[in-house]
Image (cartoon, rainbow, N blue to C red):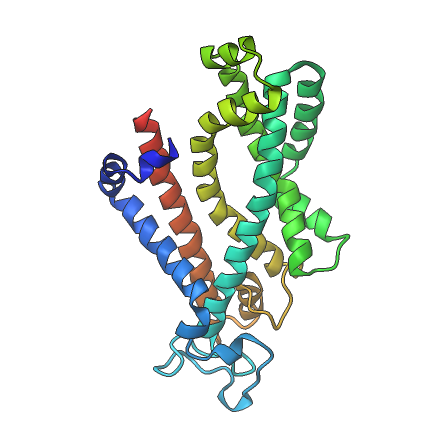
Length: 283
């Protein structure tokens, strides 16, 4: 089913939606800037502990299109490197949350009974707490570092995948191909991984695309509150928090990092919606 997005028919359906193409363009732009940050950033050295008080708090200009911050660092360069942090955090968080959530959801949906009850009640507890509140509570006990931030966000994200995989596994486990696999004596891991999981992947893949934007938003929110990545590491959320203290005079310090977050979140959401439409119509 995932391959349907990349064949000619799937691509035709995808590109017919202008918003999907806008999402693809924005995501490609963000990813390219993050990957090529040392090459495309005007002042790569400004991504670290750098000061230039002579050029501090300068408004947008030809030499500094996004202006400079309080210590003279180029805001555009720090935004570009901030995308590196945001994308890395999103990939790591989902790389942890998706296998855990999908694995537990498949087990609960297929086995049922006590396994279903225990796993899904734990999932219900996690889902009853607002995601940002749960992440803040976890970070309150940890040192505010990038690694701890990723662990906190991952701890609040796996239940969504568990719920998704659980619903699909319950439905798929009643299908004829699963019953046939059981009759011929296929092992439980084989049924879960080779039979049920491939039919859950389109929905999981689409949710991953949608969630990348939300993970970036949650991580930026933690940094905005001082619980995420700490200076001088360039992080979009902490840049917005720092710039917000100097509004409206130094407006560029907050506005451009905030727009960068908006571009990333909007791009992943539009792309995810386009992929979902393609996969839904392909069924």
